[in-house]
Amino acid sequence: MTAYLAFADISFLPPLNLLLIFSIINANSKLKYLIFIPAFFFTIYYFITIEQFAVVQCAVLYATYNYPLGDLYGFFYYSPILLSFIILLKKKNIIDKKQFIRLLIAYLFILLPFVAGFILLYINLSGLVQNMASILCKFALCYAVALSIFCLNNKNN
Image (cartoon, rainbow, N blue to C red; front, top):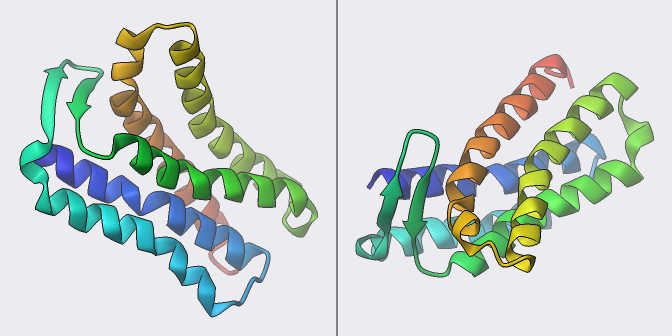
């Protein structure tokens, strides 16, 4: 159940982040809330299939999970982050330079382990790739903290 709660919790982080970026660039479309559909889908789906969640290995710094639709989950998890990063780079003049750098560091912090995972997969170090989900969760926490700091510094907006 703990693994499910962790996945459910972090599933909403990327669409919330994209919503933040949409608010920064003043994108006022009602369609922007559709970005939450994959997070709701996976939260409900994983609740229904919770018996398929398995903690394969658990250590102090990481845990290895087996869960259904892992690649699809990864695609829908990283798509809003990547889109947010691209929008931020294209619209960097909209926010203060110091705030832009904070957001950029947050994105790099979460995108670097993701890229490292693909590199490890490419060079066939599958043992390390199996632990990436847990490592990425820890980076997601740092990502959430960085976004929270950004939001607190811009609470008037």
